[in-house]
Length: 71
Image 1 (cartoon, rainbow, N blue to C red):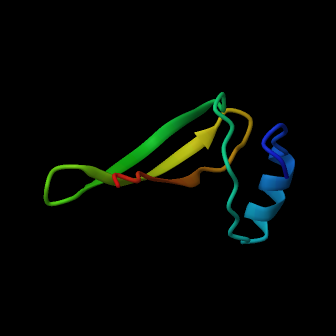
Image 2 (image 1 turned 180 degrees about the vertical axis):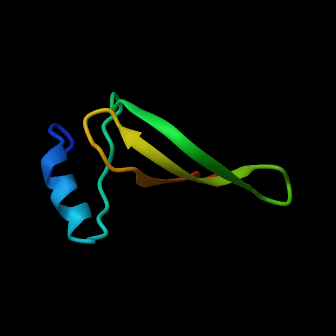
C-alpha cells in the first residue's frame, strides 16, 4: 500500500483478524491522540513516543510509534 492512498477498510480487516501491521503515515493524516508516553534519555532528549490514536475514518484505536534520530 503506497502513501498516496490509505485503505481504512483494509486496516479494519487486519485489526479484526488480529494482524499486526506497519504503515508509513501520510503527512496530512487526521487522527485524535487518546494517550501518549514520551521516552526521554538521560540527557533530556525525547527518544521516542508511544501513542494510542484513532484515525478520523477508522473505528478502532491503533498504536503509533514515533522514533527520533538524534544522531
